[in-house]
Length: 373
Image 1 (cartoon, rainbow, N blue to C red):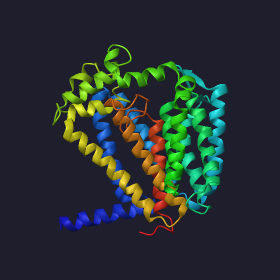
Image 2: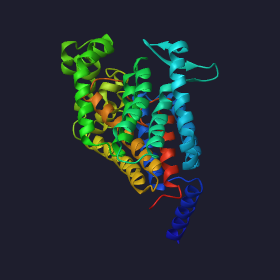
Image 3: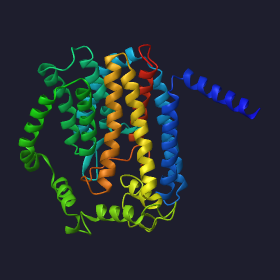
Image 4: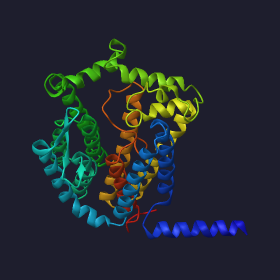
């Protein structure tokens, strides 16, 4: 009898998800990741219930956006790509003239009733625009389409880097790059572009990077050179992760985080809190959960019978991987600190809304008529 009831409940849940065009596998994985995020955020935030309530409110808004986007047809999304991209670029230009300045960066627009970061919009607008453009072309991509696509990528990336916000610029640039990669750009072209980038690196170092950005790179190479200054974040982060050992110190028992040695522990360095409290095995399980989400997104991409859907779902999934790769590399001292959050775990609303909007697009692709699975 209990098995029959459980089967009926599962069937009802599946029908509800299908009615809202939501992928049940992806929803389950995102729910598990969000639950883990709240668990570790409660510890990182010092058991601050107000912090948890604000994050829960943001998650509710993000999920609402995901459901809304999931119910937009692929044809409409493709038509909106150019408008979305142009609006995003215009807002980035507006930031230069009217943006709020905070902590040495000019990234926000305040409309009175709404304060937001326009660069976050480009994380979705960028892959949508490039995927829409290339979906009408003969693949693999030739030089002409590559140059046009590269121009569409470079303009917003430079505007975001000027704010300065290298972390977001990296994510937006990666989103555009992955569309080109999935469109079949030949390796020879990538090698030529890589050679050009290598030759330009000294010029970028001298003229494009700010002093604090150069210091971050130098600190990565030798954090102990300034242990109480620029190297403090990385040193404390590695101490926290290393002290977690194999099995961790237990939830709420991390000394580095609970005793305030670890900076930015609710945002950029929340993975360090997790590593200290749940250890190596806990970190492996968390990374595995992320990889399952990425795999599901790539599976949906591979099963899309539409070039626009295939390129877009693949780029969004791989950009989610960049979030994970950069954040974990940053807190373990393998990459410079660039302010990329741990997706759906770090405290913050703008990034969460953008990510859930991206997963809404992936679910819309999965629900399209040309989905082959």
